[in-house]
Length: 319
Ligand code: PEP
Ligand code: MG
Image (cartoon, rainbow, N blue to C red; front, side, top):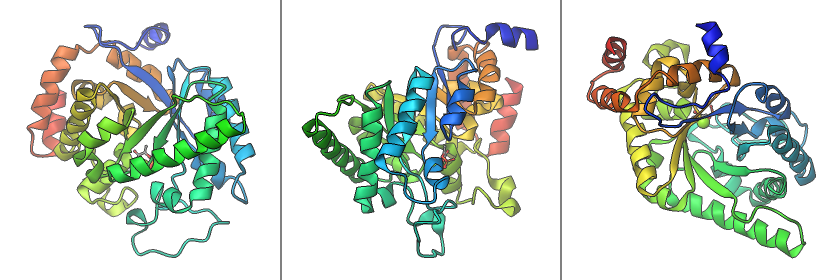
């Protein structure tokens, strides 16, 4: 099996009946990109830009960010999706004091901070735009709960584009912007978000936490934290269906995307792309290449009808 896995690594990520699924890597910095390209990946599906900020003792300048993104784009040589700053929750910056919050995961986090701290956000967007002249880069906004936030973020991106044009600096004028689907609100607003976003990326780590109201880091209730829960599966289905109605792609970048036990289910739920830790790509591709999309769709329908995560897992084991 290991020999087969190695032999198939360079083949396309395709089901037995020809549905092609792109497999991407999740990374946190340029060093990770360097390592990830040693695996057979279609690109970087999630570049968690906050690590650039966490590993600095001050807000990284536009120039520093530009150089990091540019180097990553050049190293990758394929598409790379950069997620804008996702701090708050459990991640804080020593040089950016934040008031203590009773519920930081429900607090000032991710896009909420970016929209409030416009200059900081613009520095990052300008850096990403400048790097987009050196490779295929996409932008992903975290923790979106409404269309308003997406429109606001896109408006600020437009401002940055106008400034760069004014200065004669080149960038990809048709850069794609995507929404991370990781809040229940974004699932239920997927229809209107799909009309305005270029793509979706489902973040099951947070989506599971928020849908089930189960803290993703609390060991005491770890047993309740389960992405096989029908509420998670039905949410994924809603999101892929909304995306496809608008001709957009729906991917997944949470840990669930790298779980072979879920692959058939995820393909059946309609996902177009999976992004995971690079070491999992070969396993997922091997699994994927043995799945029939037609069968996966029936399996997903069956799974969505179940009443508990345990029942879903039983259905998967029987198939
Ligand atoms: C997620 O929430 O699933 C995700 C990919 O983002 P993070 O784990 O960085 O919160
Ligand atoms: Mg998240």
